[in-house]
Length: 198
Image (cartoon, rainbow, N blue to C red; front, side):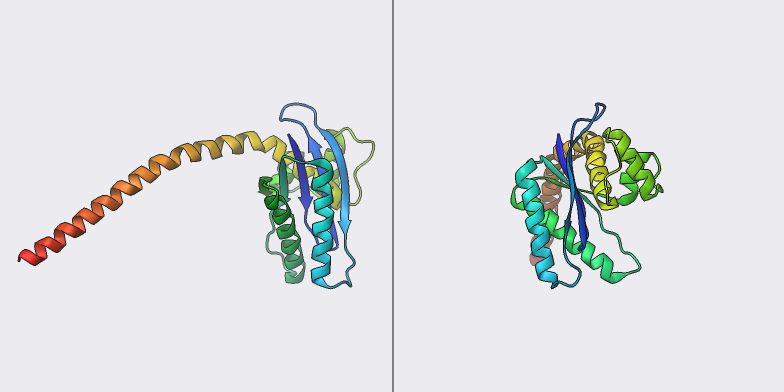
């Protein structure tokens, strides 16, 4: 499985590609940062992020894209920029039909370090160890992108089983819902005809 991890941000959008399967050694295929100037117009910054992510998708052809789920922070301006960059990454993947998974920061930290409260240095150290790198990727956004990809590879088998179970359950739910609707319609029809004869 080849996964592009995206740590969204307007100034620095971390990107990293990891390949492998759960339970086996993982391999880093690429890591970097898509940068935009802080003084540029917002629309141009989003276009630059889109172009950067498109280049990564062209070069590495990932099967999945894992994006950090955006949570409300104290700085509304920061969270808005992060959410906008996140949306660009999801759009790029969706346009190509590549499945997108969202992972929370604590979920990623727990998957990579064993603790949902790990700091950036701990995440960087574990990413370095897990991918057998000579040094931690810099800046931290790049290491976070790799951590997202690792998290998805390790968690995808369980998520896929849950999605398959839900998909198998949907037809049964639809049949039950259809029966309820038919019963409600029959009851309403019976009540209406009863009212006319009274």
